[in-house]
Image (cartoon, rainbow, N blue to C red):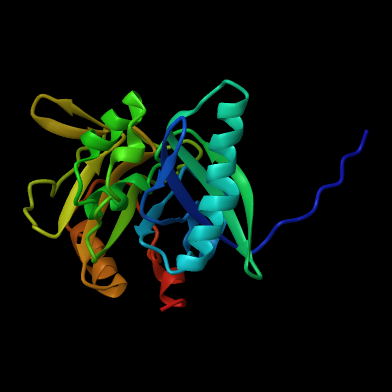
Length: 243
């Protein structure tokens, strides 16, 4: 048998909501960069960087995604007696004012989670707890910082194929109020921090604008080093075209 499917192209973005099985409340919008090389070239990865919020999803599109994708999914699962509780991640393709679902994940998503968390004013625990108890409808809208956050993934050369491990990482002790370094593929060894995965660190920074957040993220990234360090140089660039 041969199955022919419509080719869906356009701009890809991430829309994540938190559901208690009855209602779903949106998290901040974001956009991932999945290809290994600049300008979205090369093989897909787990994500080489992300930023939040994204102008790719404006208020009108966010309402469409929430009503036509998220709410319908949550309501349908409840009707079938398999209510969904947790983070519902919709990878969407946007084209000509329409939204298409590429995939669903049941997690907040990496690396989108990092810039989203950098912008969250509300207490995440309170919302997760309300989700578990089925009380999300009683919670106020989540409060977000106005600033933009950008995450640059620092990987080891060779990822997403084979890559070296056990290389010592330097520059992690640098203090910066505008950035935070999330560990992914690392391990401790006798007081040292070594690489232990393909995607090693997620350097996430905040800024008043997307441009300043990009600058802050790369400034912090440049202070970190190990022998086979690799990262994309254009994280957030596609978002600048929408400003």
